[in-house]
Image (cartoon, rainbow, N blue to C red; front, top):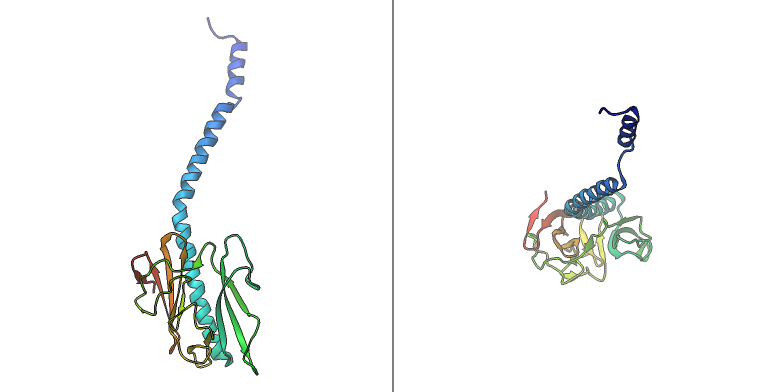
Length: 215
């Protein structure tokens, strides 16, 4: 017996209803799994991009400070500070900032920073490895900052002079390194070195056991 017109109408109605609730749940579940896998695969790349960004921020701050000191015939102070200490604003993922300030005369007073750069999200000034860079300026036990052989930098400060040298607060040229990375991720290690007499900057990437030049 052939199908009646009412049977055909019911079949067409059934086909036109679209997904059932079960089918929709299955499709959404599959999409969530695919998105989750994609996010997991992208995490290492995101971490590396953030580490590279932080390294570039330090390089740019060094170069900006030096160029400003030379062009304006001023002493420029660089500081690496924790977020939450004004004007370095605290956020959920910004831990530290790079600040540049001028020194005014008389009295050698450090002015309010004219440049405040928040470090890339989740990246910190930190010591991920006890292995020094090829420049060999020393490795701090923690904190990632080492200049003039002093962890954290000389207490007299770190400054660019108008002749392009990088010195302590007493005018003595100092060499040093800024180490940075993401906690518990050795391959995110980055380092920027400064040669005090010439202002030469080198950048390195690390893997927890060694370093290589990035340029």
